Length: 285
Image 1 (cartoon, rainbow, N blue to C red):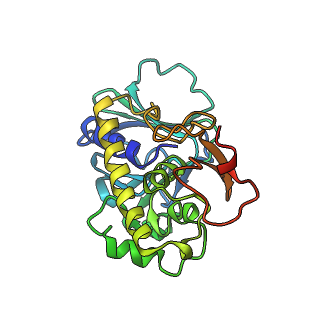
Image 2: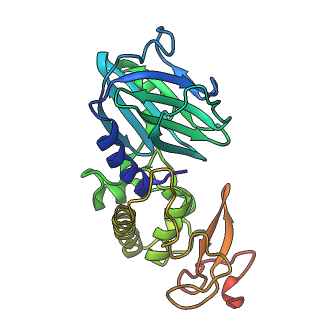
């Protein structure tokens, strides 16, 4: 899944490639990916419309079209955006191709999803709130509204584990698995720490880590300037590095189950504040 720093890069590249262009063709490779919140039939409702704006909100990408219509994509677990050229109209689309539009300059934008969990919505403004999750997103962590006071208010009275809080899209829009690990590593907080046990200084450090980690990742991905289908992760400190030495102290990075997924962390830099089933601090090598 593209996470927020990826999506910032994708948003910029899409804006350069498709803003101001007219849709001349639209198709879907799997009707279960497409959700129409309008009575007009597909693909006729998109043909001839111009894409005026591209806007990211949390993990959603929205394309504003003529006639108060919006194309909204939620890439979810495995979705990818692919920009290219529509070369062979007779070529059969692979099963992973969920949705595509061809523009008046020959550019083709495809949404590709190997597991087809993501969704593509077409909706007027009045029905954007009907799109699952979109209307319930919390504060966008890249927006001016994401302040220390707002963050303190979000975490106040939370009783879940801090990693689950970070990934709660109704609180913060939006942090995924990779950057939840990176933020906690930067803040030196164990992923299983309960929010209610965080000291005020730790909450402030966590807020600072969100801003710093995201800003650094956005800059690194922008600098690399890879195609938008490429997920750039090799610069991350702990995510995906289970069994490797911590870049800060050399302790072996470990993975532990938190909720529905695994969290990567350093047992030395992020010590547990309560007794856990496995004491990783005693298994540092």
